[in-house]
Length: 84
Ligand SMILES: [Zn+2]
Image 1 (cartoon, rainbow, N blue to C red):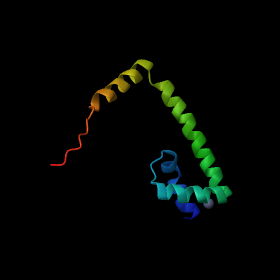
Image 2 (cartoon, protein in one colour; image 1 turned 135 degrees about the horizontal axis):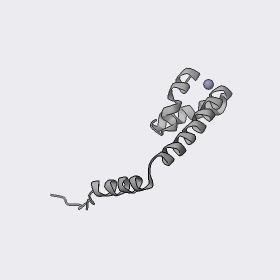
Image 3 (cartoon, rainbow, N blue to C red; image 1 turned 135 degrees about the vertical axis):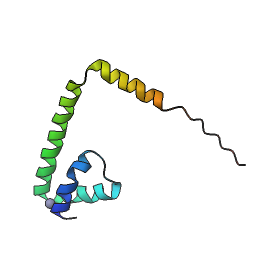
Image 4 (cartoon, rainbow, N blue to C red; image 1 turned 180 degrees about the horizontal axis):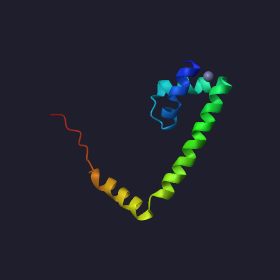
């Protein structure tokens, strides 16, 4: 993986959208390349700030409702092992 690839994948990596193979390769590169490490640092810091802003933006009540809605959406599935 080269610097260009790493930089294009960094934001996905921060969102944990990369598969394991790719994120491992990316991590390896970031550890050995100070330029990409700086890039990664600034992106992850920015993400943290954005996250904070988002959290403050959403009213508490709204968050609560969203959580409840999520709970309701997923029905509890009972898996039965049946060999028919
Ligand atoms: Zn690099």
